[in-house]
Image 1 (cartoon, rainbow, N blue to C red):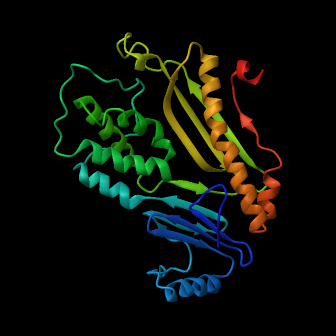
Image 2 (cartoon, rainbow, N blue to C red; image 1 turned 30 degrees about the horizontal axis):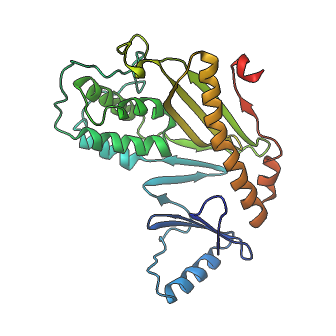
Image 3 (cartoon, helix red, strand yellow; image 1 turned 180 degrees about the vertical axis):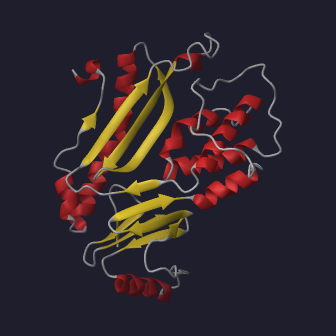
Amino acid sequence: FQPSQSDPCLFLHETEKIMVLNYCDDQIWLCPDNDLIESYVLKLKNLGYDLELESQGDIYSFLGIEFDTVGDHIHLSQKGLIDKVINYTGMGNAEGKDTPAATNPLGSDKGGEAFSEDWNYATAVGMLLYLSSNTRPDIQFAVHQVCHFSHSPQKSHGQAVKRIIRYLINTPTQGLLFEPKPEEGLDCYVDAGFCGLHGYEDEQDPVSVKSQTGFVLTLFGCPALWQSKQTDITLSSTAAEYVAFNMAMRELLPLRVLLKEMSEKMNLPLIAQSLVRSTVFEDNMGVMS
């Protein structure tokens, strides 16, 4: 096995066409031949490594993520973690909401009522952050808002966390549905929000004029990586779009390199074909010109 030049946690066996992705003390082994995986795991055990294969014959649950295969479609969800955060915050009997956040941005609420819930704010936000990063991009923006105040939450921030959980109560089994479209390549959708907290925060506070970046990278039409975060202070909406475009490219270009390496060493012609062209969808004329 050789470590990937793009990702040191990914190991590739070019001869046997095996990929091993390592995450702390968990691994995913990928190979067209399951018997070959078991053979190599046995070799590592004989060398003294303490390894245990999951009983399922295919990817079923990795780091709390459930994989359900229906034909050519794959559904990823984390209902177990959703139930956990609902129970942790004592909201088992709460009514659901149709959206994860209010229409107005969430500010620092200086001078507002103090946070007084029975649960720990940072713990609840941590669970929501894990959800938003793996299977629930629909709550990414809302979770990013509440993350800002983990060090000193107010009552309004606790209410915002509850709003996200109420949305999850309405959508406990939703997640990512992968429906691969081989004719589509590695593409990017990017946008920015200019001075999103202007008028909601103290105008002398720099955070009031920071912009928001959001983007998603798709491979074969399936979301592969996404992000929503507050970024720099810019002087125009076009400048904010430039920052967002720049951040998206910092993810797109290295991912192209990683996929190219995988396609060459694992003999995956479909991925190689998808890298012929990447389309970036951007709606700002100043950036596109």
